[in-house]
Length: 174
Image (spheres, helix red, strand yellow):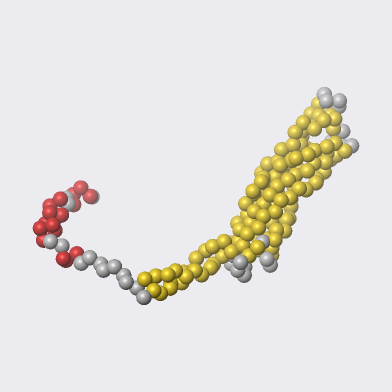
């Protein structure tokens, strides 16, 4: 006869991902002549459940290297950019406050375009974030009632038992 056992386990109950392309602008101390580079570092983020959406709060540092004074001098703009992005998730079960939110950067923030606009540098940052909501779920497992018999250790042949006792030297295991 077959029966079912119920097991409660942690499982992914919701998923979602979103691509972002955001425009930003930073003011330079000097009037830029040429943009020499743009780096995005120190990406940090976390997520919190907001009904069936996840609010991702994060930040990253932007470093823009530029030349000025007709390409005779250089400088770097450093700034921290904070963001709050709402990501809709598809959930197969009801999420609860006890659900764990796992946020992953599927594509780290990267500067894809930068241009000079007077004393400002306009730049585009793209990133992609993935979300998993982990919660409790119940699964059913088909089981059989015919359990295997346990071997009775007292049924061992005495000869075999004596041989085992001779081979085991307790002093070797201290």
